[in-house]
Image 1 (tube, helix red, strand yellow):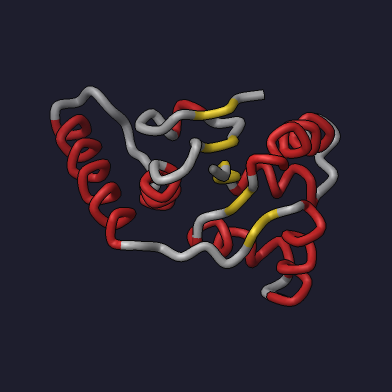
Image 2: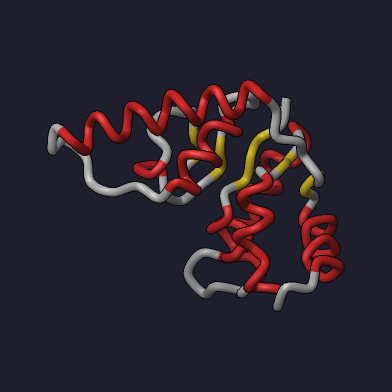
Length: 132
């Protein structure tokens, strides 16, 4: 079963980030045999890095070993619904700060798979994560 790759990991590699590019690439190489995919949200989040050029973006994804496209299904919506409700309840009680809705969607999508490869585990508490 595949691993979902968080946007930050791909941006590390694409931008040749001096601090994280190598460790991000090594982590993906370690999990490549299980399969690597991205959520539709990550696809959208990557657009600015490629100047909105889908062809360049998809070429990069193929070179990194990402399977694309990966469909969003009803179960993902149901997962996101539960995650967002839980987040808002915690926020109203003062026990949680703001959380981007994009992270909720990525986390909901990743629940169908082995988990999420990210450098930001605190943003994705509801899913199994690989942190490097």
